[in-house]
Structure formats: C-alpha cells, structure tokens
Image (tube, one colour):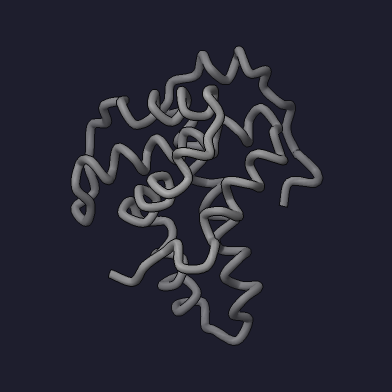
Length: 141
C-alpha cells in the first residue's frame, strides 16, 4: 500500500506540531483505504454494499477503540505520546453510534495512523495496520 508515497514526507518534528485532529483526519483516510483494500482482497465476490458493511465493522469508533486497546502495549513511547494527544483532544462532535470514551480512543488511533503515514514510517504503519485486522481482533457487536 505504501510503496510509492505520493507526497513529501513530514519530519517527525513537523508532524508533532500538527493539531491531533489534523493527524486523525489523515489517519482516518489511510485506515479506511487500507481496510477497503483488505476487505476487497478477501471478498472479491461481494457487492459494493456488502463490502461497505464489512468495512464499517473496522472503521467505526467502537472497533478502533478495541484495536488500540489490544495494541497499546506494543506502541513505542513516541507512538503512545501521539495516541494520547489524539485521545485527549476535545472534538466538537461525537457520533451518535459511539460513546465519548470510544470516540476519543478512536481519534487517538487515527492520529497515530496519520502521524506514521505523514512521517513515512512504513514499517510501523504496516505493523499497526496488520495488527488491526488480525484474526479475532474485531468482534461482531
């Protein structure tokens, strides 16, 4: 997914100065693209609507909060710092299908994904993304 980065990488310092919601904005897009590609590769026979329904299982706030809970111990100190900044940032809105705690954890997860993408740390980003789709990581609710 990230072999050909189509942007100029941010330095770690420059990325750290971004607002965590800006990092989450990028991370949301990166994660959504990864999940859509993952699901399509596993389920080429599904209709677009059914692919969308499968993707929602991963990209909703509840799922992202579960993902970060399970991988939190594997984060580096820097990654944990970025996650916490995203998690602790106040947002003007909360989706109707998520509680505030889940939404904030999901925002932290997206901030982390956005940060790793922007600094071009493909190895760690791929590690986090692959961990997010490991067997039994996402539970049906």
